[in-house]
Every structure is written in C-alpha cells, then in structure tokens.
Length: 352
Image 1 (spheres, rainbow, N blue to C red):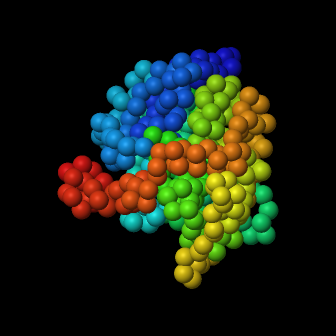
Image 2: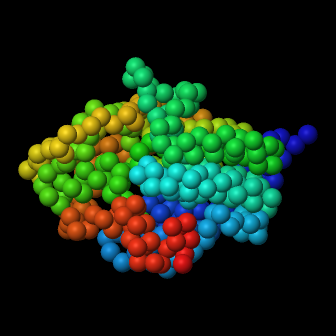
Image 3: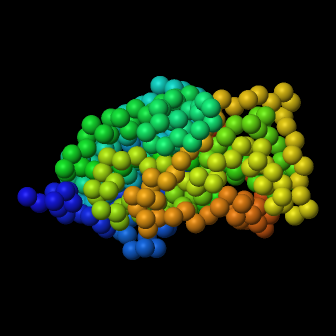
C-alpha cells in the first residue's frame, strides 16, 4: 500500500501555492518569501487595504472574495495557504455575524472548493488568541482548552474544528496558531501591539498604553510566520497532517508593559511610558508554549527576538518619518469605515 505522502497525490513538497489574503499584512511578506525560495505563487485577495501600502502608495486590488470561491479557482494548485479573514478583534466586533460569515463560512468554502479541485495541502492561519485567558499564568500548549473571548477568536476555533472533519488521505490541513504578529510589511498594520507602540514612539517620542499593561501576550515576527509556513509546506505530510502548531518563541511571552519597556529602551534617548486615562485590564492574557513546531519540524527555528524586532521597527519608522497623521491608514477598522462612508464598499464588505 502506498504510504501517506503518496496517497496525498505524491505532493510532499508543493510547488504551486495559492495564498488567500495575499495583499494583507502577513500575506505581503509571505508571498515575497515563497517566491524568493522558488515557489510559484498565485495571489488572491479582496483588496480592502490596497490604498494602505507602506510606506506610501497603492496597488491594484484583486477583488477575490472567499465567499465566492469555486473549485475552478484551485485547479493545478498543490497547496493553499489561507490567510484571508477579518483580521483582528475590533474589526471582528464591528459585526460578529459578518465575521463568522467571512472567517468561518468563507474558510470552509475555500477549503471545500480546494479539496474538490484536488489540492492536497491546506495551511490555515489560526491564532493563539483562541486560548483567550490563561488562569494561573501557565504556558499553554496545543492541547490546552480553547477559551475564545471575541468573535474573531471564536471563528478560529470553529474553523479549525470544521477543517479537521475534511482531513483524510487526500486532503491535509494544518493549523498555524500564530502569536501576535509584529514587524514591517508592505501591508503594514498599526492595530497590533508592538507595531502600535513602536509607531507611537517614533512619531511622538512617547509610548502610550491603552490598558494597564498587565496582560501577557506572546509575540512573533512576521518574517518568522512566513518561514513557518514554508517549513510546513516542506515537511513530510505525516508530521503536519491535521496538526495545530503554536508559532512563536516561548521567550517572547511578555506582559504588555514589558513590551513598552523594550520600546522605551530601544528609542534613541529613551521614551516615557504613559497610560490613557482610566486604563482597564485586558482580559485576553495568556502565555504559550511553542516547542511543538520546532520538535515536529527541526529545520524551523524562529530567527527574530522581540528586542531585535523592536529595534528594527523603530529604525524603519524613524527613517521613514512616521507621523501621527499616518496612523489611521494602517488601522484596519478605520479603513473599512472610510470605504463604507465614501460608498465604494457595502456594509457586507462587498464592493459597491
């Protein structure tokens, strides 16, 4: 009998990879990374943030909607990397039903269409946020209970569970539970903690915390996320089939205030840490163990420490002259509201 890899169409190392969400924050880095390593990459994206390229400029939208995916979209594809989603908690809270429609139903439509087209591997961008809160502060591995606190995190849980039901000897899903991502990207976001703190420091000379800073939050550089995806695509299929992997560095589980201190230390001349008036406690607090992915795929080791990444971001933002007026362009919820207000985007997040 053929072994497991052979039953999966013989595609142990995919060559043609379709990336959904290819123009987004992670996607913009991942596409470049895969192409630099010889992969034939097909890009798919709705194009919501094409006017928000960093440091300036715009690109042509692809206008491809996960809710309309068909098997024809995936003919000749070896693997799908599915990044497309409403990508953070504030955006997910805007309309929880729409978040479920895109992040869960859209994911399943893409996966089912890909499977029908004969795609053998499916890499799903999940999130450590599905752990929600870690009572007692222990490190959580992939077997830990899921306790999502937001619509965004809930859809990561339900999508993982539904994808697992599609797994068989012809279709191999893998679930990448990324820590909170940071680092420069052509699809820059400033609505994530490290990027936000660094941009504020570079633009204003101070650091502003919007909570009391006590919450634990694991971090991972966007380039290491891209490298983890390539590592999974290269790995023997039996070592990643229907597996979840936390993606990050165990050493980079820090409290938000500790991240702020790293930013302050890295700023030329330092930067004072300030708090918004009456800062609350963020209930999303968890520490995560990242040993499984490096044990399963020894060739993958994160390259960036958080301290190095903070210095990189500050250098980029200071050299590019980051200004407060630039911030809203790189915050997803603000851009969605702008497009809706000007009438180019429907409230259903379809193009008018």
